[in-house]
Length: 279
Length: 319
Image 1: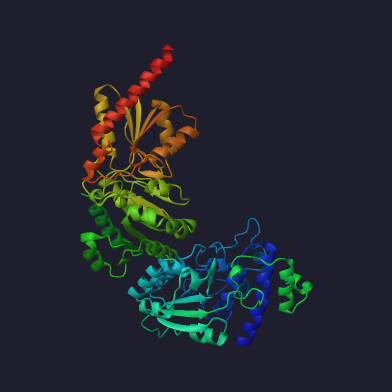
Image 2: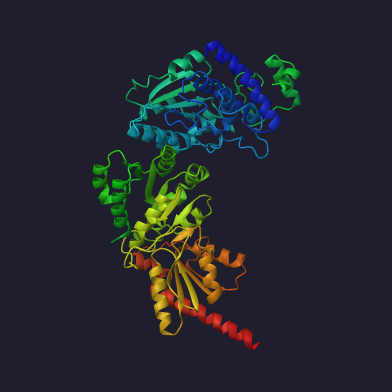
């Protein structure tokens, strides 16, 4: 898929994320939008090795979305690549559905149940270690938030990744600078984040998490020529990316637009209400 | 042989047989560390003092088909790592075996931070988790075999050293099936872990006074052998539980739930730590003595329980 096609898909999925979140009153819109381009690149950009009709294929790359509250973005992408169908996706947040505010292992294509923060990187360590033991060239990608890094378990996992020389592990930080109650720098500052990750034994790269050229170039890893260290990618992102009304707004971590706000969002999407309803 | 040594000997045998077993510990392996590391450089890993990371990583290893045994003190696993056991292990129903050392106050001189006196209560509430608690060193190997044969998470509660052996050969072990050690008609004593030696002591002493006991080794805490509890309680109408653990939420709590729910009008005495931490120091027996849990003290408590019950029954009969 070309960069243009990926961008077109992202535009479509952004609308769908808003629609599903509003109609189900479930999910984190802005957290989903900050990492949507990364997820899009991983799956539609084919950075990950997978077969959507063979979800338990042992040699697939593993992906752990540690920031499980971005479940809606991942589910929309999983639908695009055929792990789940549209009918199932539209059960999101509905009574009895396994699709909801956290990622569930019950959903095809999901490798790890997340929602409680600070678990995913450790799972990534386990997956990467399993690949080493099983002498497989599969790669392991973990996506964490930045506020999530307040959890100490991330740093336990980072120590292990380095100690165990897990150079098949890629840790992507969706650095949108906002967490539940405000800005990351005001709550528990992570800076200098790059220096910290480097000190923990990772090669560190910093990219724009909304620039497909940079994402594809940085995450497309030659599995036959892995460097010595695990890789950490700090992806600078915008919380609520693509929706001017909510972009970088501190109070939009877990809220849905009211009717008036939704009208503005639909207008900014450049579509009619009818087109929105038909998404 | 001590629990920990017995366990590591068994582990060595199992790892030689089954290449899928991977042993992770949080810097707790002690003097067998070197031997295991030499034998299994890729399948024996000291994860360092980071239990939470170790649990989640072990669960991912399990998802990819390995069989992880994770080991450290029960006090750190059941409390510090409770949420990792709940989320990564139990919600996802991962096939990992959690080896919890230092049951009860076995880590005597290390103090209450190291005591596993609430671990059964913490673990018992978790769906999907099986809890095994072997009574003495000879029961470890069959319990470990059963844990490995079970496809799902298991919490295996082990002691440390100086345990009393109650068996002469390894007993049969089936998850969810209690082991009736002796049969009687007046009193049911249900115990778990090595403190069962006190139950046997009390039962022997009581027999000298003509009181006969069912002594039940409840070496599976979950799923509890409800039938064994009911069968015996209906017969004797007097039940005593003994555990090196809080009486709240542990074996005593589990038995109380069964008796109450099934409407069995049996009198129940729960012996263990009574809503208190063992904050005083000393060797294992010193701590037990301070909390009225030595064999002789347990015997006396059972006698007074029986007396009070017999007296009350007499009172009710005459009034």
